[in-house]
Amino acid sequence: SYELTQPPSVSVSPGQTASITCSGDKLETKYSYWYQQKPGQSPVMVIYQDTKRPSGIPERFSGSNSGNTATLTISGTQAMDEADYYCQAWDSSTVVFGGGTKLTVL
Amino acid sequence: QVQLKQWGAGLLKPSETLSLTCAVYGGSLSGNYWSWIRQPPGKGLEWIGEINQRRSTNYNPSLKSRVTISVDTSKKQFSLRLSSVTAADTAVYYCARNRWSDDGEDYYGLDVWGLGTPVSVSS
Image 1: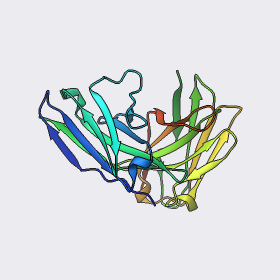
Image 2: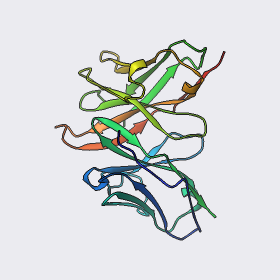
Image 3: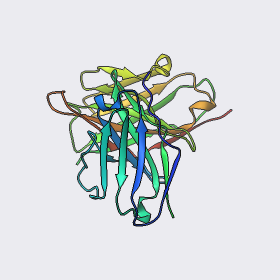
């Protein structure tokens, strides 16, 4: 079965750029999706089809996908961006999630 | 704007069957798949499976033997049954829309989520 690997944690200072990676075999041949989940809340999609932002998602969220790695980038990170982030792909008619990355803003 | 409202029993004993239902408001069932996802305490998201209006299903291979997802198109509801539960099935269970384009060619991801139902399995 297909697997997606994320770093367990990433730290960033307020106002700096945070990058969260997601690795999978030939991931660039699939679309990647990213979800933000704050404590006690349901996940919210922040990036779909590698680079697109759903309505209402701030411009500081961006995505890319090349080779075996998809990347979620948060520019000018704010305290409110502190959350768990999950990547996701679609493979063989199944939804696959990465293990999640805890983003700490400090 | 599509909203999902979910409900079901939150406390089960080992070997019982988990049963949850999710209702779709403000939109149609057609054209999309409707998923169940779970999250054990302190852990990540695990996709369970999905169904569309035509009752076509896809399941996570690791859970397939115990999972049944069904749909009631007249009520715009879809349901999850997970049999023979153990403590390892303790989790928050979410329903979500797995959005596709009208022609079924483009996949847009899990764009609408329910609030989640906590389920605990304990003797």
